[in-house]
Image (cartoon, rainbow, N blue to C red):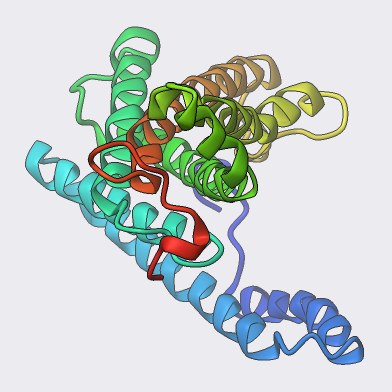
Length: 265
């Protein structure tokens, strides 16, 4: 027992891996060819979370602003790589744009929450800044992946329409705008659905964790509201930035649309 939290023994922890047998049985029965992916994901889950736990123990003990910032940059780099890995097909050269969108939107919102709402002291307190940033980054990367995939897929599906727009004198932005709007809407959907279900269908992760740790449920609810709102804000900023900064990848410098037949991917 630590600070009101019931500890989980390592035997029980590794025993919980049996839950993944459900996914393994389904994959095997339906011949989904995902057995390897299930095993790799499970092992990564164990290793990455335990490693993060050890890292946080170190950060909490040796508070240093530069070390905390270094960890946040590393988390953002990993988030970028994972987001691009979720995009179907070849996602062009959008790595810098994705990193910039995810990092800036997440850090701006996280710092506003830490300084303006939670009032952490110092501002780089790892117990506050790292978990909050992690929650924002995790949700932002998912929304970014959805938005990028939808943007490029929609533009490809509208190839003839975009070409017609350009022939009639429209700019590349005007021709791509319906796809941009569709991508932003798709990226926002998960966050809005989570907010709608919170407190009725589910008790979100942060609130559940605080309640299990013995916190007042009302205080935990307040924290969860802030978390959901900050995730919504960071997600919106990230997907708007990424859509408006990457749609040009489907156009030549002089504004001609690169349809699937003209691209070398």
